[in-house]
Length: 89
Image (cartoon, rainbow, N blue to C red; front, side, top):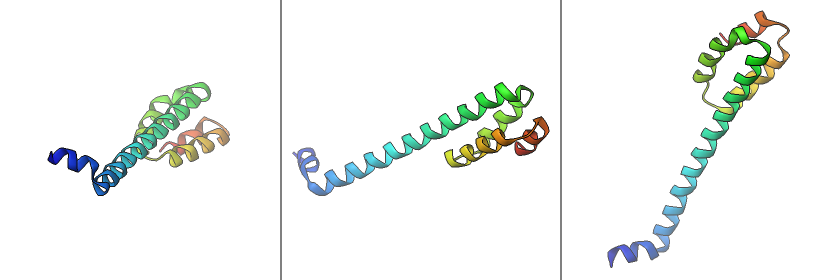
């Protein structure tokens, strides 16, 4: 009976919905970070394969998709391997 009341209570329903929405948002953010990491790694593997291990270490330290996207843009514009290496330190 108590469980039934808790499930039908509008306030409890709203709280549950908010918790679920936060969980979904966290999941989406993690997925976006994972995708951005894969994008950076794939690019470096193609253009600067000697820097792949260093890149793996760098992308593990970066925690937001925006930072990873910025790194990706910088790597695209890197003139050579030395320039790319300096972005990874």
